[in-house]
Image (cartoon, rainbow, N blue to C red; front, side):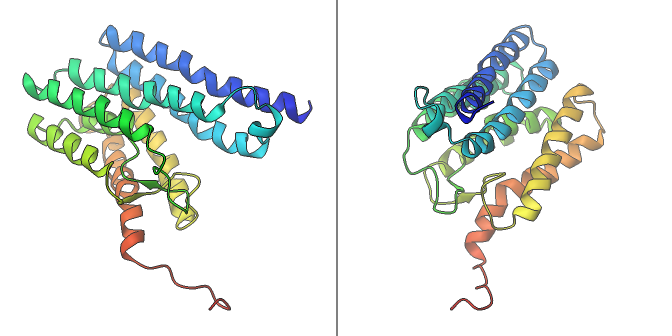
Length: 235
């Protein structure tokens, strides 16, 4: 298979995220939250694979007819934002007006963030919380905090979208990559585990989700606080 066909296959792989998002939405409409999150985890895996493949096979050069970045953003908005916001609103985790506020804040703030040309930093991290509401809402389903805590988390993370606080990219941020990659993989495993057991109380998956989520949320900020040591031989 030549590079052009490989590049096309990468685009087609990215597009499968739209099908997975539809499966997740159908599950959500039926109130099958665990199944919905399993589909979203599959979509997250596709999203984690297609980027490195797109860079490896240089899709912008070998198949420029399709805009892979635009396609990825469309799929990401469905799987990262729209469906998780719906789930949070309809699940009963939030009461009355708090559900409306959270849903509006998530979808409105995220669409603005997705259109911000400054969302990536020079080291390929994210400037501000990268609207990964699929991950946040899954953790909220697993831990079931009070509706006031949920509302605070939603508003706080939305506000950080429009700051210079750094959030690491699971695969592209080089600093601490030796730790970020296994933490990201661990999050996916714990997420699938928690959804598979229908978020059963007392599951060890919940602790794994909390630990890995705390790392992914704070690693970039810690990197801003702790200056990187210069390498030997470099002045």
